Image (cartoon, rainbow, N blue to C red; front, side):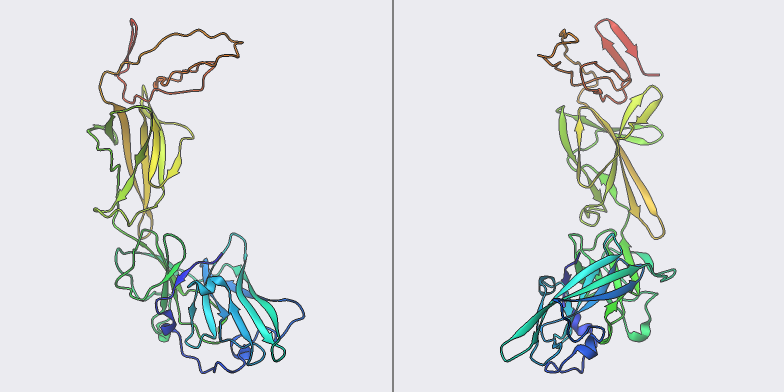
Length: 391
């Protein structure tokens, strides 16, 4: 799998080459690749020993001559579509490669066309087979840093005798960006990863990062932008009460708000847990955990707990909010009617009631299980029967 890379002048960061475009470049740039093969593909193994899941691979580019000065190289689409950055002479390109779930990843650089006559060429596909091994980069290779607009141009694990490292960042929508200005980050977001590389030299084939930085911001608040709590219930933990004007299934938007900034924590995963109120208090509904990013659904009057683990320097900080979606009135009347069904009756299916009590489980033999999600129910009255749940 390849990730797109915004060039943004990255070639200027590379060391200049003394190789001339009209020469044959194999021995200087790719000495491990044979001059020719009998088959149709140059398949070359490379080894990446690192704790990082991303490395840079050097591929030939448009001005590269493999065997004769008249050779051609046609780069793969991923390189042409800003998936790499290039040396000034366009002899090679550094392409970011993301590790797969297996320990082997292929990267197709393109096709080299070796000139065999005045107007004839032999085409060979150029593929690197990257074998991943876990490295021992040591303590400090990966670190977190608070940042909402800028990052350090240096990393403690990168040797400064080679100058400041070149930096690439992950992009929220996928891919990479070259960081041209570390003081003015383009659209930073929580858990964004920055890869620091010592400047590649012309005789290198693969470049592993010297350090990785992941950023975090101020702790956000969990908010429901379209539903403002009317009150809250103070128990061991606060529960926000939101009175619903309508019942039934509906979608609820949720955001992570960092002092008015809704973009920084966009797309982060929030854990939603459904709850019910029993005689001893709130209780989690088993197997109700789901991961959400921007909205969730409720059906009737429900109690939910939202949890986000915000990144911090050396740990994650738990942030939670509980919401009770309540009836618009404190006194709720449910209209009901009794319909008889026989056990062996197949022609009709019960029109199951929308709600059942959340205080205890009630199962109709012919109906799926429902709950009346009336959290904080203090009294239930059916005909002349009344039950007090207030204590």
